[in-house]
Length: 396
Image 1 (tube, rainbow, N blue to C red):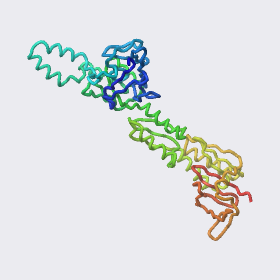
Image 2: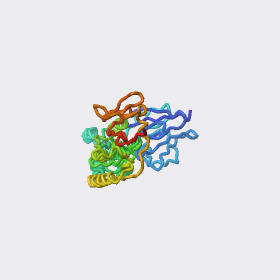
Image 3: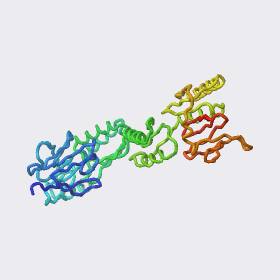
């Protein structure tokens, strides 16, 4: 029976919930803990029972028991109030009534109690005043908190004192390291607080992680306005982006995102110029990460046309990574057709392809995988597929 203990959470959405230490141990935190509650500094609290006594391990964080600093190598008393890393809970044996534990309101309440004993008149007057303000923080402490949040990087952070004496932090901060320093300062003052502050640097990391996991490995994320991010990446509407959008919408504190896809404009400019200059039947255009490669074997006249194309595109996009490779086209395009190409026909309605399954393809025809026929002549057919231009020479 000596090992039967329980805790009662105080404050927050789980206020009043009691949890038994069934196996003589309880871990509280986020990663792999028995009870998942975000703690300040991503910390972890472990309660354990050894030889009938309860111990607490909170790493290097400050632990206060019944308002006094507690050494974690010493056992906890049979019953009391524990505070650490923004967490408050009462603890005791299974049969103990822990509902009477409340968050402390600070030393001024003690001084008011001493003054109440002086005279009946003072008793009545001070009691009214105390009942109206007992949950408010001491003026000096409130002033310290206000000054703390005026420092650079925390001016978008909002502080509000609840009736139970808990400090609620919300809003935004620029840098999570600055906020962590402020958290440690609050702990050193003995302030019990909860925070839902969103730090811009952490928000940028969260957005970048989601994009990287979705395959946008070259995405660049910045933020100027709190809660808003600017994403520079090769993003187009499709199944992949459709999966990402709900994940971004669920990120706490992210209110708006803007997409800038310079690669889409670059890709379109290159392909349009290749088609306009009559090179579509001779070259392919392949996006490689944030770069573009034009490949194909050209004669002297075509090479001159291509050189002009490269010069003009680079003038239009000074930062573009664009190169040319003098290599023959592959047979990749053949794999995209639903059936092998049987013949090329010149008819009254123009040139078209006939596949072995008797399907006919003309300029503008769509293939099952989404490819589009954008160029067709007696030598080759050119497909446009997801920003690439695929040139497929005929072998008959």
